[in-house]
Length: 261
Length: 250
Image (cartoon, rainbow over all chains, first blue to last red; front, side):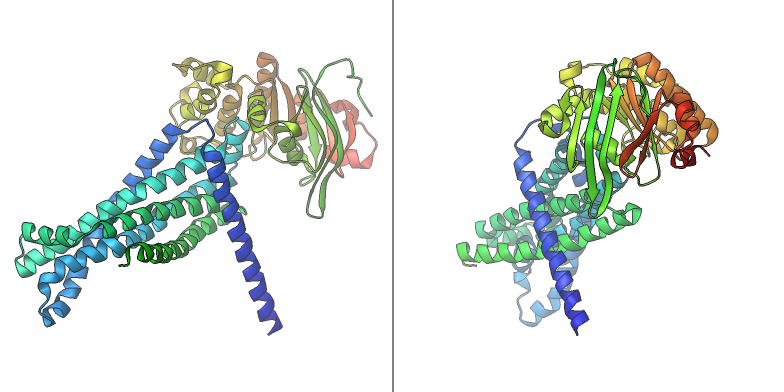
């Protein structure tokens, strides 16, 4: 019992230390973000790399989710004679919640682990130290550019994912219910409001920031050789996923206060 | 034993350097002076703090106490920008070469060059400078290769070219021959010698390799128990009767 209690205390202590270090890392980001030199070229390269690397995956997943969601919901809606509500239901669900969280989770796996592994391997092979001794601030060059790129690219990926998911849903409705493109998208745009789109888009910036921040934090502080790189990549995905759900919960809570949805 | 080098100008002066990691005392009052144009070899057992010492010199590690003067500037008191500027005068050759593996050889060499516009101005065409550095290490043909296409010896040479491109006054070598076969090690040591003559650099060389020390050292220091245990030329140290010193040359 005492051993169990000690392990629990140690785990809690480690968790709090980790949270403290992550907060310090985030603080350093905001402190150094404003200071020149600005690594604009590297930022653009990262934007292209992050966006390009995840676009296909986000598109395919978005299409499948839209299509499957529609296929699964159809029998239930049919039972209540409410199939005509399909476009409205799917679009609100996807825009408000499913699109952002699924895209963010995919990107946490794809981008977050990639950043964790890349920076981790640079750390253990002394490439970050080499950058430092060549008179370049590696935090600005590697960390700030990546966090900014994920913060800006994730909302774009979510928008693409949402649109493709709704299109996937339309295709199923078109095949199963012979619903025309105009009718379907008229229903989509009639139901969607400002309070659906704006808060959902704003939270994706925070999702992107969390993915970049945790990936960079785990990679930049990676130790213990090559096994440490694997652990950094893995921890980046696990911690980011947890953080995404917490941010989502807070975002929905705050949105409820302002819009009473 | 001290060699008489006081008439020369010290380019690096380390005084009473202390560094510990938890309860493990690594440096316990270490002193060193590096003079202009000399090759100073620092030998010591694994884990004796040699690498930590040169990382303190370049500002990668913070000492617990002590003074490190590099070109008359106290490293520990420098602001980030001043430290970065001073670092352009110091080259550092890492044990594992530390080439940026996402960049080609050309990009590896251009990286420091493009970031130090204060020292070099804005360079439109970096190719001549890149080629000059690569020719100095005999690898001009490797300009478009990626690091994963290079052998261990080639990586070490490219890393040396990357440090040379900033035309540093000081080069710190962290075990430059470790992990290389005897022939490649010999080539690297000869290359270091030729670089020192061509660029008139001052160097601190951390090594276990007695053959390397024999060829390259103008002066040697043995780091034992965290202090500068003994100092002298290779022949002075290799003929010492002290068992602790002899252990390195057997």
